[in-house]
Image (cartoon, rainbow, N blue to C red; front, side, top):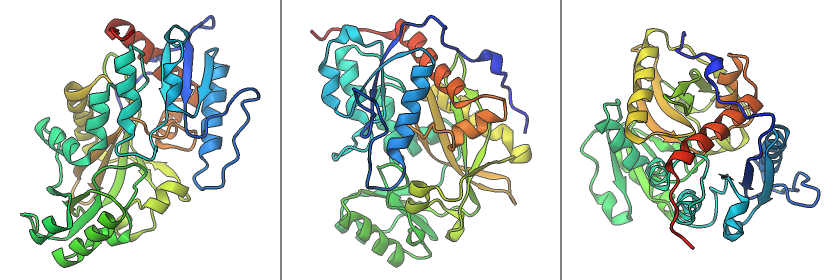
Length: 342
């Protein structure tokens, strides 16, 4: 697969940078020693955040850290950019909170504006927006209450049942694939019992592929990546996304590549700029058919993730990627920034 990308187009931090970053994450390394936090759960989050912090420091940035949203209410003059990974707080759509608060306070934040974050986190609204922009999407129907499940969608099975919101494939299991509406409704009820709104889509055969991209004067497409799956239908389930045991591999879709590139441009025109993002698809290699599923703004940017794997084929390291997204974000927001909060 040949892409219109050249590494020399990347933004790079100056060796004399004085930019001050506020790094927010649930398990962020904290003063005074900024050590990797202890963690009883799974997913390796503290090590991931510690690595990001370490790389940002190595690039020359002044980095303060916190695990609390209240850190935003410190002196605004001490922050040039908020780098937030606080997207799994115990509240509805927590991904939007920090971006909205930064907009109110006039603080630049890495990623995208709050309204774009909200669009990305709603898999139904983002599907509608993508379809309006010309991207191929699967048919779908949202369900918010058990009573609504009495009416099946206006398309036949097989169905795919998932969480309308949420991150890390929360709620996705092999039970998400159902041949008929009875099975789909049962799975939907199980997700609702977990407090989730539900999105039912037509099931698309094939495999999952993702398109990682970086922001720039135009989006920088790094390549296509296929996450490993040994589950029914090759889907990425909640446990696979959390533990990532099968990793990722570069993927070449052949002549279908141009369609993916056109989709990135179309989405960028509709909702950009975004500092870094990922577009997720189902792809049927036999038919060359791609179907857009969602896009992700606060996506994994670790060394083992799709972004850094795709970047590595161009000789780029995790530090190169992080330096680019921070510098691009600072550059674009110097032009955009407005403040009226006291």
